[in-house]
Image 1 (spheres, rainbow, N blue to C red):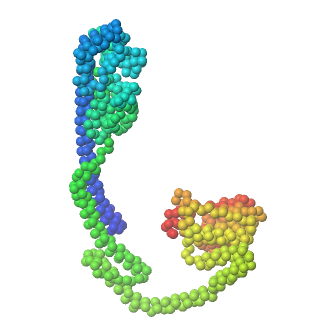
Image 2: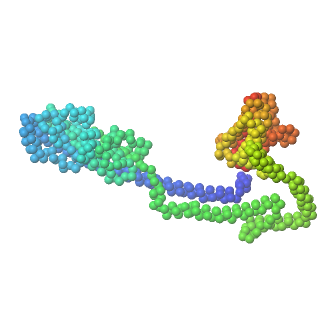
Image 3: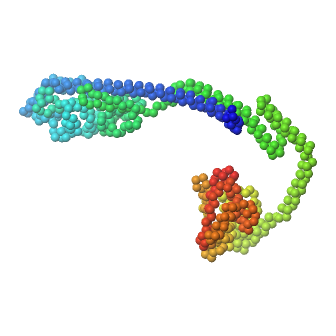
Length: 593
């Protein structure tokens, strides 16, 4: 049980918070996480099944389209009338047109209209005696150089699927530049001539089938090079095919393929799933979710908050009155409304103790206390009498009279210096609190330097650099002024050339940096080491025994202000000047400011 005694070191509010975290918040997070994960897994499983069904439907539709087109190609491949028409050499155009009309009347080419999936049937032949029409075109060098013809020749198969972009159709009525064709040789009866059948599939038929899936996910049908179809946008027939690289592999959730029955080719069917949104399912079950929140979080939170308020407020109140006892203020607590539990009994015991102490003070120490109050009143009267002997207003009024006479005589410079001196003396005598803002401290410094500039003339110049965020930071009063005064007396006064004093104040990380430098006489290495040693070993006794206390006093005040965490550096070179750098942790200033 000794291990549990450590709980005695924590406040009651901390213990109640621990109970809340372990018994309420953690179980709530666990149960809601399970609820969330269950819904997410169910959603993912459902989406997976829907994607598989979509792919099955896409495969079925692709099979229906291409099987129908292959059936048309088989019919034309075996048609004897068509073969005789493209292999016959015609003496003149009249003979050709007679035969062409006969072919149309027998409905050989128009057979493909029975298929809704065929967009165009074109037969390319090396028979130069025929005339180009919608369905018959002579094999010219330009056609042999086309993309689809090269694909057919390079594949070396009797029948292939060709995917290409036909620029000639980009501005056609149907804007169907994307072309997917079944190409095969017509060599069933004659292998001596080159006759090629190209059946262009209706691109929009397959695209509409994909859009009819109504999928929220991204569905793609691709060959090895291009994205042939997708459900991202409609009306893309005039656009070039997107590259297969446009699909981000990291987003691919399902990858399948469709193998064509009569063709040596397969197409990939890819689905990139959008993020599962479990909150849509949570919304559907909002009654259950709200019930869990009330059961796991809201109700225990209210109960623990009420108990914490009941216990914590009374303990805090008792602690406040006990601190008053430490300061010799013996006040009782009103017992009304503080209950009959252990804390209520403790409050009543405290009141009894305070009353006993008051009785003891009144009986035993009443005479001594009265005597002490009389002596204190006498000392206060003597102190006020001493203070009244020195009236600083007389000095300020005298300086103001001198300044006004200087102004009347036109001695503006003298009046300005007297005004600075009066302001400096007034702020020094009216000490107030020991800590002031850097902005107010720099007003001290500026008044002082204006007076010194009146003394030194153009020999002295000064410059301040302070960031806006540093102006409101509080530091001990006259801490910067002491170093500036030291620079004027021991640095600037000893040189005959022009010299300057520069002050820079800024933040670096979480530290306040104060840099004070002058271009005065400086000091040699021996004197510099002596000052450093005094600062490193600074104590109250050292301050009392030292003749020069300004810098040492300021150093000790700053160290006390920031809990001895200030980093202090002083560097100097003879006839070049002196530089003082102070680095103060802002957390220590906030602790003491």
